[in-house]
Image (cartoon, rainbow, N blue to C red):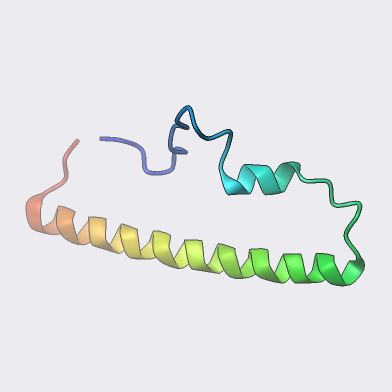
Length: 71
């Protein structure tokens, strides 16, 4: 069974995912207001991803309950 927490492998056309690109970006040129907006956007994205993760986990748990766990 694959570990769902592992990052997906990158294909030849991608140099990295969006989060990696954001983490490498120079924040120096941004104003305080722009940084606050960026933080709010990232917090909203974290909440969206967490909601999806919980939904996917619930779906997986329901499937395991119905069909049994595959090891």
